[in-house]
Length: 160
Image 1 (cartoon, rainbow, N blue to C red):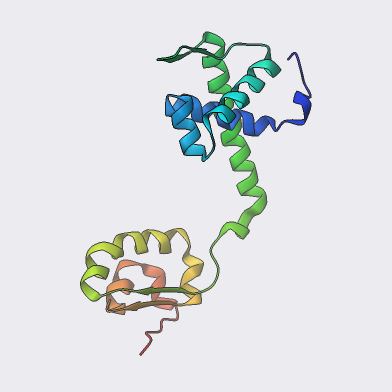
Image 2 (cartoon, rainbow, N blue to C red; image 1 turned 30 degrees about the vertical axis):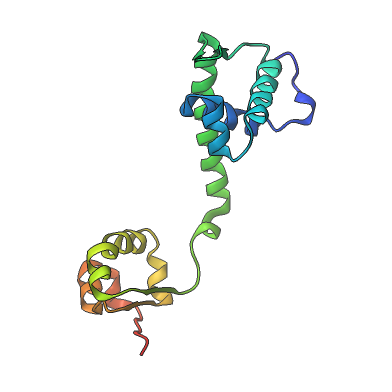
C-alpha cells in the first residue's frame, strides 16, 4: 500500500463503493444505488486506487472494465465485506431480531392469497415473535396453526 492511513478515509466504505461500482456496471448506476452523486463515487474510487497504488478500473466515456488488479481486489473486497457483515451480525446477536407485537391487518382474501407465504417465512425466521402475539384480521388462526408447528404453544389474540 502506498498510503496505509488513507488520510482518515473509511476503508470499508471505499471497498463497499468499489464493489457497488463493479456490480452496478457504472459509476452513475452505483451513485444512484448509494444515494449519492457520481462525482462522489468517482472520488471514492480514486481514493481507493491511490491508497492501493493500483488502477482498478479502466474507464472511458462509454465503458469501464476491471483491470487484472481490479478483479483481484474485487474478489478480496467481496470476501472482506461478507466477513465484516458476518462479524457485525454475530456481535450484535439477538439485538437485530424484531421485538414487540406483530399486527397484520388485511382483508381475508388478501391475507390468504398474498400474505401467508411471507408471514410464514417471517415466523420461521423469528419464532420468538410468536410468544409476543400475532394478530391477523380475516385470516383464521387455524390456518396459521396448521402452517407452523410452534403456533400450537403461542398466545394468539384476534382484536374485535
